[in-house]
Image: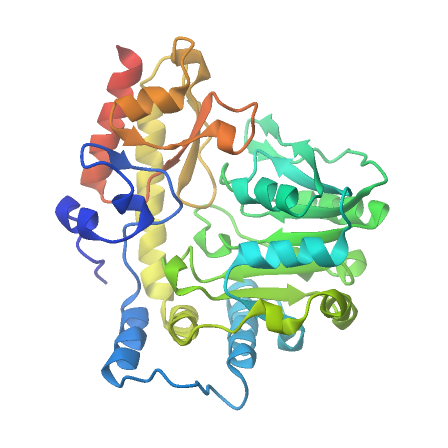
Length: 382
C-alpha cells in the first residue's frame, strides 16, 4: 500500500485550510485534517465520476441516495463494531455540525442546558451559543490512564441534552464499557437525549471503540449517533455524514420539528467516496493507524524532553493534547509555538481554562513531524 507523496512543496500546493491558511515559514499542526490523501478506492470512485461526467441526478442501489448511504452505514457498523444499526432510522446530512444544530433545535428549547465534557470540540460551544442554549460543562478528570468523565455527577433540572464525543477530541481518549455505562445511567436519571459524536471511531490506536447506542436498554429511546468517513479517510471536503436514531420514535420526534428537506441531500462525490472508503478502505486505514501510532509515540518522546511538559498519549485520533503551562514562562504556549513556526490550536479554544494546553496534529510525514518537534523542543528549552 502506498500513500500520496508527502513532500512539503506538494502539500503547500494543496488548496485546503490546513496548508493554504499557513505562512510558508510555518508548519501546520492545527486543523483536524491529515496529509495522507485518500485510499486508492476512493480516488478511483471520484475519477470514475469525472471520467464519465456522471453529474446528473444520481441513482444508487434500489432507492434514494440517502437510503444507499444508510445501508452502507449499517453494513459498516456491523462489520467494524458488531453493532446492528437499523438503516431505516438514519438521516443523511452534509456535515455533523449541521446535525448537531438540528438536534439542538429539535430536542431543547432556548435557555435550556446542554451538558458537554470539557475540554470540547469548539463547534459544540459555538452551536450551543448560536441556538441560544446554555452550555453546562462536565470537566474531564485527569487520571494516570487519561482523561475520564466523572461518573458521579448531578445535573440541573434544565439540562435536557448531553453531547458526547467518543473517541474524544481533543484528548484522544476512548471510553471504556464501564464509562459508557455511567453515561447510560446519567442519561436515564436525567431523561437526556444524547448526541454521540463518533466521527473518530475508525481512528482508534489502542483498545476498541464501542458505539454508545449498542449498549441498548435505557438508551434505546435517547441516542443519536453521528459519524462520517471524513476523518478516518481524509475526505472532509466531500461532505457526507450520518445521523442514526436509536429508535423510530426518537426519529419521529426529530422530524416533527426539523423538516427532512432542511437536511439537504448528499453530494454524489461524497456518497461514492464514502461507499468506497467503508467497503474497500480498511487495508489503507490499517496502514494509516500504524503510521499514526508511530507518530504519536514520537510526539510523546519529544514532549518528554521539555522540562515541565506533560502529555498523556491518546488512544485514538491524530491529535495530541499537550500541557505546556509549566514551561512557557507566563506566556501562552500557543504563542510560543507560533513564533517558533509551528501552528497548533490553543487549548483555550477547547476550554477557556485550558490556555496552557495546545492541540497538536501529528498526521503528517515523519520528516515534517520531526521538523515541527525540533522547533517545539527548542522553543521551550531556551
